Every structure is written in C-alpha cells, then in structure tokens.
Length: 370
Image 1 (cartoon, one colour):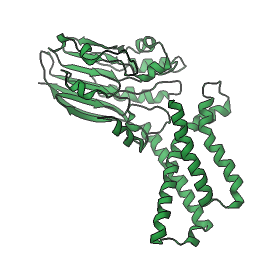
Image 2: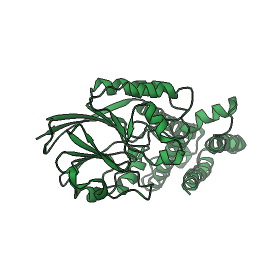
Image 3: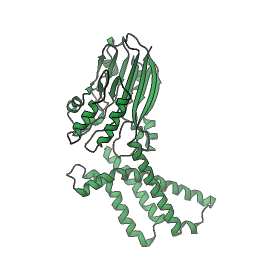
Image 4: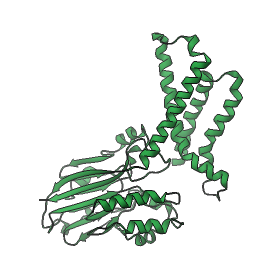
C-alpha cells in the first residue's frame, strides 16, 4: 500500500506537468520529440524501482544512480509549473505580459529553461545539504536524584539507513565528527541498518562505528526499517560494538538509567510504565523511542529525557509541513512537563539522496544534573 501511494504521488503530478508543458511551451514541430524525452526521463524512477533487486548491468546501474534525483526534480518542476499557472491567472487581470509576447518562442524557451534549471539547482543543493553533516547543540538541566555524576555529554543520531549503496566517506565523516565531540555515551535512535548488510564495505562501516570512543559505550534501539529488512539484528550491532535495548531499562554504572523501546511497528511492545519499573526512580532516566509518539504519556512518567528520530523532518520541502502536522514534535527540542524531548532530522535519509528540509544531523546534548 505504501508503494502504491508513492507511485500515485509520482504519477499524478507527472501527468499534469506533461500536458501543461506540452500546451504552454512546446511547438507542434517538436511535439513527438517532447513526448519521447519526457516519457523516457519520467520512466527512469519506476524502472529503477522495478529492477533494483536484480543483477545490475551497466545500463541498470546508470538508471539506478540517476533515479534517486528524478523524483525530487519532478517534485520541484511540478511546483514551478503550478507557480507559472498562478502567474498566468494573475496576468489575466494585471496584464503584465501580453499574449503575443508570452507565446513567442524566445519567451517560452527562456521560461521553460529557467524552470528546469531552477529544479536542477534545488536538487543539487539538496544533495550537498544531505552530504554535509551538522551538529545541533543543546544544554539542559535535570534532577540529579542519587546520581554520582554532575554532567553527561550525549551524542545522538538516528536514521542512518546503512545499505549497500552507502558511501563509506559519509560514515568516515560521521565518526570523525562524533569523536571530536568527545561523548560520554553514544546513542542511536533506530533505522540504523536495513536489508542485508553483508557487502564489501560493511566491515569498514562496523570498524568506523567501533572507533567512536565513549565513557559508557554505545547503545541503540531498533526502528521500523530494521524490521522491514528482516535481518539478523545482533550480528551487525555486535560487530559494531553497539548494545541493543529491547523494551527494557539498563542501569549505567549506577549513574543513570537508559531505557529503550521497540518501534511502534512491533505491536507487542511494552507500555512505557511496564518498561520503567519502580526501582528506576532513584536515578535520572533517559529513554529512546524511534518514533516521537506518546509524548504526553511519557511526560506523565518519571522520564527525564527522550530521544527519537524517524520523521527526517520531512526530508523534502514542503513534505516537512505535512510531517509537522502529524507529530506533536517533528524535529528539534521541546520540554513537556518535566520531560525533555529531542527529535532528530536524521543523520542520513530514506529514498532520494536529497535533503531540502532539515539537515544531516548529529545532536549533542550536554546534561547538567542538579
């Protein structure tokens, strides 16, 4: 059903764009050339999706490399056409441009070229934004209770979506930045790996994740994509020296509690009250839940801090507006009651290798226990 929605979301705007561009910009002399080029380019994305799991020859590898940029290109080209149609509607009353000039070859050529180049520029900017990892810094205070420490530095990431197409240099950049922050503890908020991770770069990725030095270690919860991939979770995380937390609470050196929940996709996950057993009231409680849901429910517990991901902050503008309407906190930081909530826009992405909403984010949270 999800892939059906994606297909319809791709197909319907493309039909609109196809006929509007043909009517507004294409002369009869070039109609068949236009039809051929448009259908060929528009077909790249569905073809890549259809044959992505097959042994790739050179042609399919090229199609696959290009396809990720096709969807966001058509998204922004669609918006350009919508804006142009809005301009034409306004022009009926304002008469900024005469009909004769608007229908001239020169005007049509420059207008269509400008919209294509603008859409390409947005996609390029989004690709650069994706591959530039940024650190978001926060500083909060929570009750010390019986903890023996005064400060705790947490580095938190989610949604890396490690697969066979991941560029190793991206993980090198992440590991370098994470180590430079000198975390006391490294937390991963789910959707870290998907699919079969046994490929030529997997050992190098695991070694890079192991290279992140901390006082208390590295911990992770699982997201929906770990379930979708059907992988053996323990293998990758054990090799990367990341301890998984499955619907339970860990006592970390008698300094604080670290709890982790199964993703909502797992319908048998425990309630928050079942996870936070009674003897967790003597130390600060840090919780990881892949999706930022049940915030009000969590805020009614003794949880001091919750970390989440999943939303990607929409990844592509203006999808972030839709995501913001779906979640009480879609990205960033908010304190509800006595609980501090953090939602990251994700270290990487899912789907098109482009980010025009949000950033490739490492969250750095300095906690002072008072």
